[in-house]
Amino acid sequence: MTFETALANRKLIYSVLLRAGIDQTHPDFEDYVQDCLLIYITLEEKFAHKLPTDPVSREAFIFVRMYCQIIDHLRHEKYRTTYQMPCAILPDNCASTNVDHALICLRHELKQRLTAKEYQFFEMAYRCELPFTYICHELKISRRTAYRFQKIIRQTTRQLGWEKGPN
Image 1 (cartoon, rainbow, N blue to C red):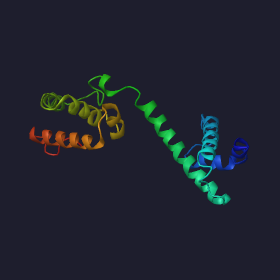
Image 2: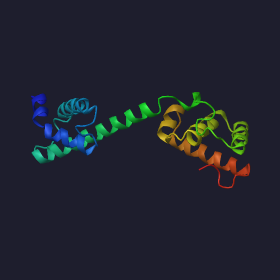
Image 3: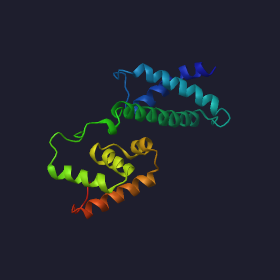
Image 4: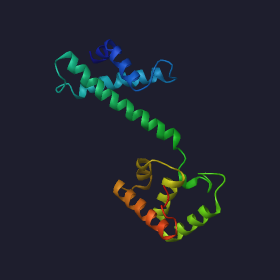
């Protein structure tokens, strides 16, 4: 019964995908439709006792939950494809091929003054410009620790004569 209900509500599924920026021209559109069908069925089973009886409220509840899961899936796909090669194995000039000599000296000084994990954070956050959530996951640190590392790096760069520190 649930699968038939999901198929009957294809309009809801298409509106979720359209809201997430996935239209019929997207190369993986049919895959996302199948994902939405499975999400719909899962939601029906998981929240059967919590779903509102009013059809409009029921569709709104399912829409929001399905939309959130599709957005999470899209973010995961983006990070998986964009950041599949960790910064630790990138070449030294991953941020730029024309690196100024002063920046090379700064990196050398930071490598001597920071702990290994702080320097690795510096490489990932400033040189490779990876997002905090990805860095925290890779280094297995909390966001609080990441902000503390950021503060330490800024203080150290100021001590080395860089007034504003790295951005």
